[in-house]
Amino acid sequence: MKLDYINNINEFGDKIVRLYNFDAAEAKAFSESISMHIISNKSNFNLESATYIQAQNCQLSLSLSDEDEGIISLKPREFVCNLTLSSYHKMLLLIQPFCLKEMKSYQFLYEDIDNPIDFLFSPSGK
Image (cartoon, rainbow, N blue to C red; front, side):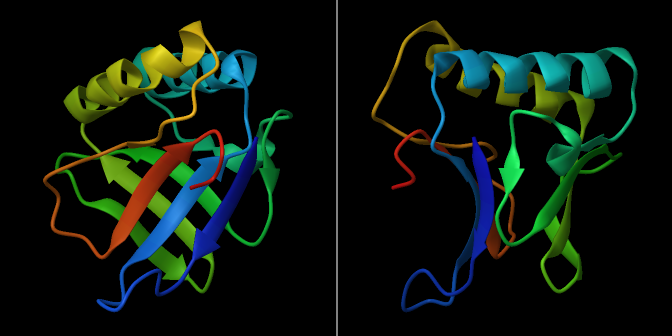
């Protein structure tokens, strides 16, 4: 599984942090990491610390928050995703189909947040 950041993906200047190039086993490992770090332990999860994730050009930490802010930039190419516990539960539901079988589709891992940086989960990267 790879992690990267893409600036200006369209004419509107949208940006994405994406997890891509993974199989069902890696999707399951990611889901279990969220469950363990965020849901059970209520602690941050630094994605680049996971052995199954290769950070390409950025760092991302998942963090619990009182509000859903989505991904924000701390420094150039250093990001934190601030979501509520409820939103992380929803994220696990969005990831679940990718854990069960190999898929070619994609999923944005949060919705309805007014934020210029999206979080894409895509086995193919597209």
